[in-house]
Length: 395
Image (tube, rainbow, N blue to C red):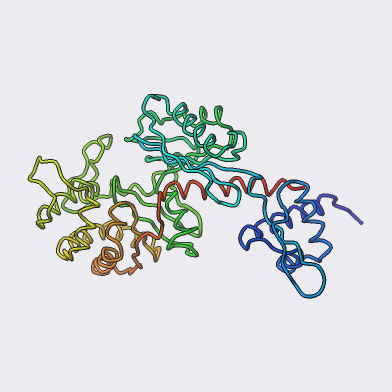
């Protein structure tokens, strides 16, 4: 009879991982409850909990009263067993969130990167301040996920190009890993929004959907089969460059805001559209607007400016229809400042407009996320990485 001594070890590791995931998703559980949910015997469940307690991953979190006999101990994951950091990097601000292994955000701060021409120094300083606020050391962070505008190469993990962040180029990721550790990951910001929608938002439970980001910049995050679709070069979702009938094609793709769809739905384009529909707060050509594009959209919804909203929906429908005829995701989430400001009123009009121009009829809904959606997505990705490390190393 051939023995494989690795099998019991592997089974214990799988059981440990399953138990830890259950404790995170369902809250503190008794030994009997954990055994029932995992299919393990009471003895095996007890051995598992003892092992995880010794590793500092599980602790008694209370008691549950039962019938006769003493109360049953409730076991939960130790929140401080690991921490992660998520970041959103913009030209004028770096937002850092630190969460414990359960996903609870313990601190969120915004740091002005002015004075740090080097992106690595700026990120390190922001993380240092966040850790100081959370009263933990940087060494306690098991993973870092950074969301940026721009195209991230899936092969190298580096930013291939970003108009807003020219200092983020090939080599920055390696420098960040030397400074903060090997677990640093850079991801496109709209891809992170898609992760957050999948975990917490209106796309929870949906494995095929797309996030259309309309606001400062235009972008697309695509989830297919429960996985982000980035494309071979990381350029999937750069819908600002989508060719649009009636809009000129770019003569030089190195020029920012020159894509056809950018000309149709960018900030300046929305302001011009608002001016044509007589919305207040839009000055004559060349003047300084008193309101942002998102504020104008919000005001249009509040005031029932149907003509403007229909015209804006028709423009958004160009991208939604293009995504639908190619990918047929079934669900489109409108996000970004404009998508959020338009709310269900704008989403409904986009859905109607799409039905007129393509055979597919996706549901179009407004983002269900509150707060900083990019940061939430970065923390989702960071937690997945950290749990994979921590929960796979219990035996």
